[in-house]
Image (cartoon, rainbow, N blue to C red; front, side, top):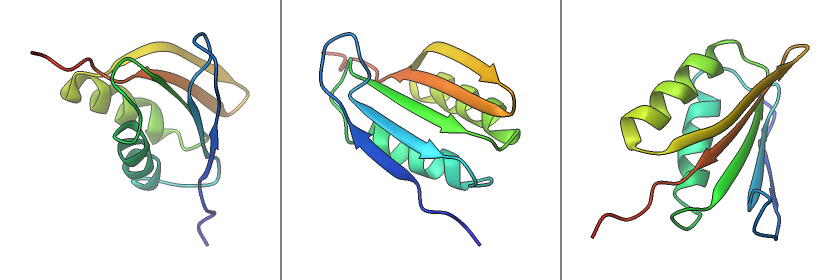
Length: 92
């Protein structure tokens, strides 16, 4: 049974504008939900993603590179992965 991803909106220029909780979700759900949420924020804003699926590390790093988004921070505590992903700026 899949858990629902939780999205929390935040304010403040140094904080991510949204947090996506993908704990308990397995491939390809963290990737799908990250793509959906990154599309919902403005260029230059940051999405924070938490996941515990080991495949999420490679999937989300590849996704960011392929789409021109930037992983500005990545960390792992116990079995939880944390990503800060900046949405690519619009190219004129």
